[in-house]
Image (tube, rainbow, N blue to C red; front, top):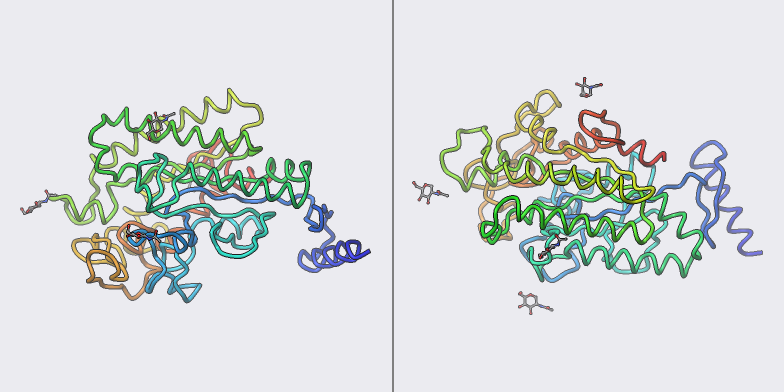
Length: 365
Ligand SMILES: *[C@@H]1O[C@H](CO)[C@@H](O)[C@H](O)[C@H]1NC(C)=O
Ligand SMILES: *[C@@H]1O[C@H](CO)[C@@H](O)[C@H](O)[C@H]1NC(C)=O
Ligand SMILES: *[C@@H]1O[C@H](CO)[C@@H](O)[C@H](O)[C@H]1NC(C)=O
Ligand SMILES: *[C@@H]1O[C@H](CO)[C@@H](O)[C@H](O)[C@H]1NC(C)=O
């Protein structure tokens, strides 16, 4: 009886919130629209919504001012003045904002959850002990599946996980590791992409089918990279630093095509952040922004020293007046406005920027 009442309440709730009657599907005590698609997020600082607030780390946290000054009006742990890509994707998918997995307290997982950790890499050694590496994120996902099965049963969990979209961004921090120079580009990239592929297969084995994968951005255009290397003209990019990103992107794209052939039901969206970030950084006005070469918050050349907030090694920093004019908020991470542009292209961009599916069509599968 109580449960019937609850179902009835959810029915009313969905009726009211959507304005039209949508078929309802019930998972144990929770009712969801039949077309409900969850979002699970894995990766690094581009996607972290606050997991690192709950681990013993200092360098890779952003839970202090001026991070979060836009939209949330308090520092949430996001490396941005406001929202990050998973926030926009959740909004476009009509899901609530996803919580960080490590947020204390009882979590609902039916809408998905965010495992991303700033500084994380595909390689276990990358910032080991200071971040939640990609492999550990997979372990956390395994735990989420277990809890979902306890709460909602095997059948419903299988459906939920197979319809869900898995958004992954990883690799940037692997390529910043000092010991990467001990390897050739080809060898190091094959380890990074190999470990990423292993995790994708791990998610698939747990029931995931629909993947949104982001490639490496044009790293050589980032203020932090330019600041530490001499001879860069203001506003230009360091081609040689983007070279490893290009090797990564080629290999990743090949691996995804292989997975599609090898494993049944595997669908993916490969998002070309490299080309789009290059465009946005070098022609910001085409996208309604003003400054792509210099960060909003930081110090040194191009505000390229990673000092925003003054809690890291370098304490000095300046903050710009209008972050929404900038591509970079700190020396590495996009502003909310740039993240929104990236998210829009991920969601509904055409084949020239995201394929074979864009995220919108992946959610609709
Ligand atoms: C946190 O990390 C610091 C520096 O690595 C270490 O000295 C300290 O013991 C750690 N604390 C805990 C609770 O693990
Ligand atoms: C994963 O990374 C480790 C180094 O952490 C490497 O030894 C291993 O070969 C990589 N695995 C794959 C499948 O590339
Ligand atoms: C850049 O140039 C300065 C002065 O010429 C030098 O001290 C510094 O080591 C150089 N940095 C790099 C990364 O080459
Ligand atoms: C894809 O989108 C871009 C930018 O939005 C546009 O310039 C291009 O013409 C489009 N290409 C096709 C094949 O529709």
